[in-house]
Image (tube, rainbow, N blue to C red; front, side):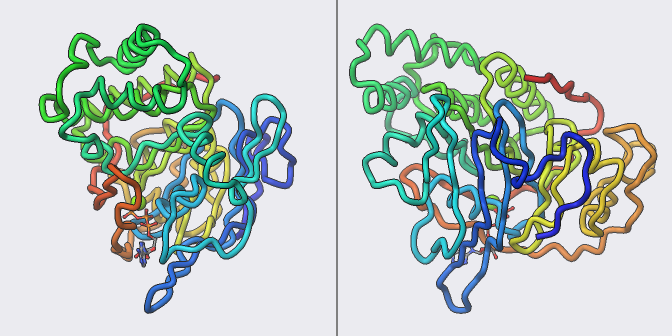
Length: 338
Ligand SMILES: Nc1ncnc2c1ncn2[C@@H]1O[C@H](COP(=O)(O)OP(=O)(O)OP(=O)(O)O)[C@@H](O)[C@H]1O
Ligand SMILES: [Mg+2]
């Protein structure tokens, strides 16, 4: 993996995990299929407390595989063949995620690190009310909570994501796609995790709903202080949303820099290609979201690899094919610092 020279915000894993909440170090993931796929190659990333780290790259480059491995959700034929994933807990302890036993792992997930799955709007259980599904997470992870406290918490998280709590007894089919997506985000927030991994959380939604949800995520991050790994192939969106961005290409992180650095001085040809492939409202390529010197000049080659996402390996999670929405022209997201 090659890391570019970056500005002061572009720290590297070797900088040490002083304010880090998650460190991925030289991670390798292989699908033992025929032919074998080396989906994640020597990936090193550091997620700092409260930051939004964007993970960009074309379909099939390994984003979801990386997210699954970090959360230990990968299943055969996927296999982690090298590297480490370390969670730096609030209380100062380091947790070696790849070494966690089943029970500690079960307690860890959702509680300290939660995930909004690709295609999450279809991941709710259709035969259980929203309330029952939120309540279930609380009953499992917070067994001492009273029924009244659980209800209060469910109300609170639904309000946080802009869903009317009065609707919590409804079933998923009674909610719009955007609302279901918000419910999934509410579920991911339920236990006040330190990290949220969001895999294409809004790709299937129309642009205005997408923007609304992203505003909420920025606001919540500001209010609650969690860190986010935000995965999408939509680089312009990440430029607005992220503090730092890692760009993946065929399993490798080829560029890893502060968002503004990456925009102003993309160091890898693939990043330049990605930046150059989004049309602007004014007809210039790559210039519609950030004002700048238009470093993005390379022409797109249309060489995007199309590949299947990993199958649904978690109960209720249904990763699906990505859509092709580019970043929304118009309304800009205003980044709030944690
Ligand atoms: N179960 C599997 N068996 C074999 N190969 C797989 C499996 N799941 C995924 N792959 C391969 O691993 C690579 C990475 O896939 P992954 O789904 O992680 O990409 P992605 O970046 O998330 O793509 P997308 O943007 O389409 O969601 C691809 O080449 C894919 O074909
Ligand atoms: Mg994916």
